[in-house]
Length: 295
Image (tube, rainbow, N blue to C red; front, side, top):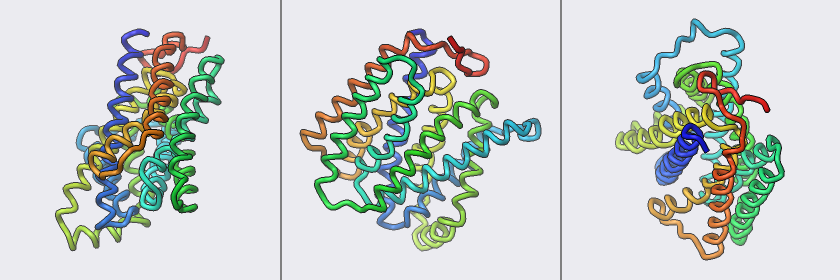
């Protein structure tokens, strides 16, 4: 694998750790704020942070660019809102596992070699074990459906983020999309957020931390990664999400991991390592646009 591909994988791993640490902190906030309020605070803070860093030259964008940015904003809004509501209803590891089905299906659909499909199916087997273990207890059906819907939005986010990375340099496209997502979630969470932080102003600090970890840092890393590696490689590497979720949930929320779940996580890690090792045979990504060069 060339240096550019290796840096792309490193960025994905860093983004995974960041977003799962933020998710664990967000789950702690559910004791004081509604999930929709936490979602809105996260997106609003992330928008302000990114606007302070990047000043998108929106007046220079054509209709095609705006369409891509708006689609990315819709995907971000849906993914965050539905995942946070699901995370309140079902365990964090299960929510991440179900959400992961979206990128896994996308990776399988985009694969062009049998070895790609084999790694995806192996990762899916590990995810299936985690899901089966999580189903041994009481499970909220609405939470499951919301997590699956978040997974579909996650697949859309991968494709839309890759497209925005092609059309807009830096994080300007991501910044605008984050603002779109914040606006779209305002009717759901703004009132609850304002009411909650007015009564307990200290909640602003952890909410800001969630925004930095789960949005500003994580999405910037992922956007940069999608300029360096193909979307299907990104999708399989997302199999590491349950691993990070389990570790951070244990450290921050206090959710333990049983031996069977540890075995499942090991299978997922092997699949993720496999796609990293075989990524050298994938089509190269051009430095200027991030577009995949067709074979």
